[in-house]
Length: 47
Image (tube, rainbow, N blue to C red; front, side, top):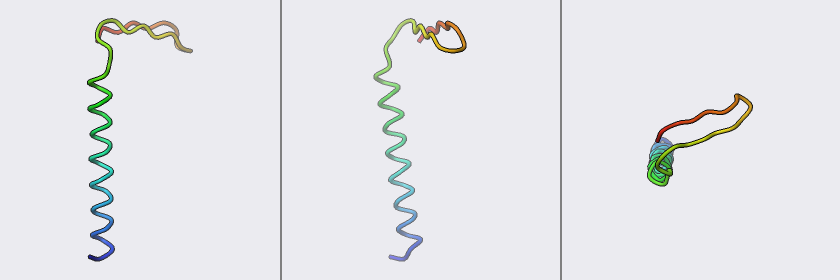
């Protein structure tokens, strides 16, 4: 396998890991209202 093959495999692994982390974060997000207080003030979101 040449250098390009290793780079391609590395990129694919990074994409799969990133997608897995995104899906995990979306599924473990709490349901209902989200109240956020930060430097921009108070914001309320309905999840």
